[in-house]
Image (cartoon, rainbow, N blue to C red; front, side, top):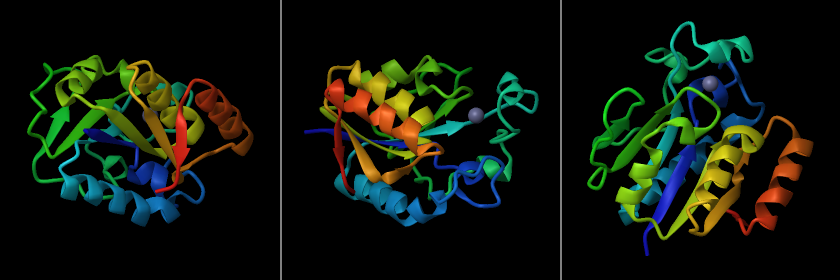
Length: 187
Ligand SMILES: [Zn+2]
């Protein structure tokens, strides 16, 4: 049984009060996210961390404040990155991630599936199920959840390890997710 842990956008700009696009209360998730990622490593489960990696003049900044510019402090993950991390960039060919202790999946939109290599990464990891957490519940987490559901494997969202900007929008998303067969659990 291969469970893939899917950690969405837990980067300084989103997770900490000083971040450029801070999600209020997200910093309280940090110990839980760190524990989940460490659990993935200790059980040999693949861990994929999606990470915004914008250019200085990214088109996304027309609709969102300037955030997560590649190489800047705010773009860093708020929890540790494993030594054997493999980066999956948009520009480079898809690497072999089968032995990677940590897959860093870069993206420049709110949908991680716009990284053209994600489908290939998922194929390589041969997941039986996905466990998803991070921010923002009704935006990037939603895109990850719905995209992963399309693989046909079970997808579980950990409700105490996600954070929303709008609780109404998050509730609407959750209703849709569970109607599609998604599961909700606690970490
Ligand atoms: Zn972004």
